[in-house]
Image (cartoon, rainbow, N blue to C red; front, side):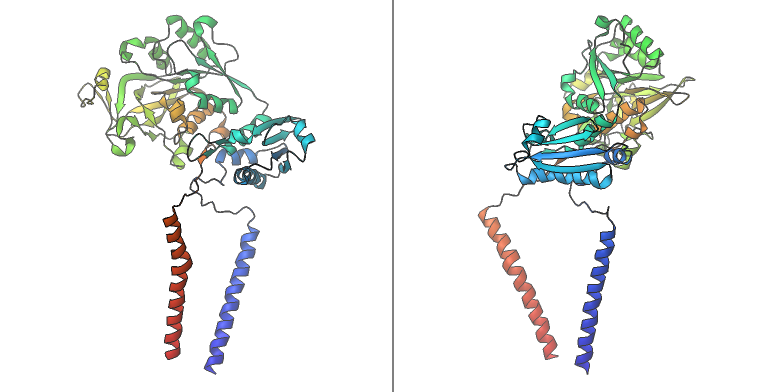
Length: 460
């Protein structure tokens, strides 16, 4: 009798487990959008910018993948899996795949030479080569497919074109050292041009935003007047200071431009003494964010912005302008006013002439009606190529631009260029260890454990 009861209990338990498994399977299957991304770089999770763009799509987008038989399947699958994520998020996205050799007429239609994505909206299209989405010049390689695809779709659905001018002639950071920033602006439908004010004679009428990035030397009185004339109209300014050891006396007109918008240059380099705000170098700082539309998402995602040789700024009371701090140091930081002393091997100690922390390193300026007018930053190193894609630098810079342009839906977190894990290269000894551990030892252990339990129950 007891044996029959035990057998019945085992049967009921088995049926219950199977039933729970079936119900759970149906439940998870009903969650069509549910997925759990366990990859380190969230390779299968679309960014906020992409998700928002897909939600607002009002045009049909057709994406076609053309591949070659000799392409490595691992890389082509990364692209197709990514496009499938777009398709899941929007019914406006359709997707087809073709073999270039089997469909030569289709390939010729788009003048394709190699594996490519063709993204179409109506009679407009953009072609992305697969090689443009992978960077094999670093180890592990990186994949920027989402960034490229989202930019391509945005360029197709947006009829807007903007023009941005970068001031030159004062030893600014050249555009050749800000290729990533320039490319990102172009991906957001900006035409980027250089501007020499003395040669041009004015800020062009089509300038929607004027960049002054890392100027070491001052503007002339004439140039400052031309900038003022531009800004007195509908002009927008993105000013990021450079470095000049004589900045106290050398930047009369740059300081004057900032003063017009209630921002004062304190001519002091930020020195951070809080170890969790720096990476060994007290002049390279990960500042805290102020509460602002530009920075709120960065704070939410805990993405840091990095700035070197940041200059302390201060906002004065103004009846015309409202200045909101974007970045600030810790209370332990101070502003070193003896600029030349920073060039010595040993950093100077804080004295009475220095500026006490916390220091403000950037401001967003708007008028009393809330219309954005300027972003003024105490440093510009975060815009150069080697730093631009670090942590939140890219999003901070582009959010600032889009806030100035009143594009609130573009003040967000953008696709990351994710590093992909490499295949592990095992030595013969390592391979044998893994084999004996997983194929022999583990099964024998559980077999022995099961035998011991069976023997004890039988004996009992």
